[in-house]
Image 1 (cartoon, rainbow, N blue to C red):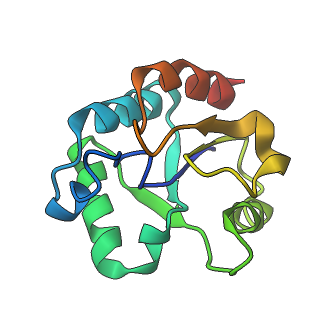
Image 2: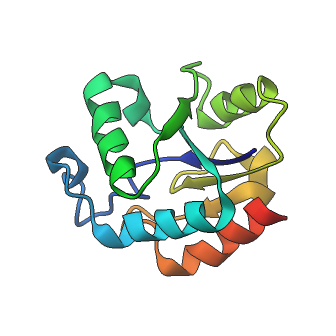
Length: 140
């Protein structure tokens, strides 16, 4: 199984659309980039964002993903040890993972995953230039 660990703020939201997902109208450009990655790899989405912690936020993400033909496959556990530790814990419980990519704008605690990260920026979010790298990681 291929997995995309998905952050929201700084990936599907950017500095200009920080409230867009709250209004259930994310910037289409970011969703289109994610859709292309998912379509070309068959990857499943694991929500690693803090948005996973609140049912209202999770439902907004779920609706956005369904609009591009996907869904939330799972969420990482809250361990209070940082996102890197939460992703590592999730992977340790899923031996079926053959490849994964982390889409995130804050990778400060993810050094162990340096070959699996596509770093976005809060200012711009997920862009077409990130697509090829994400696909290459997932399909390698």
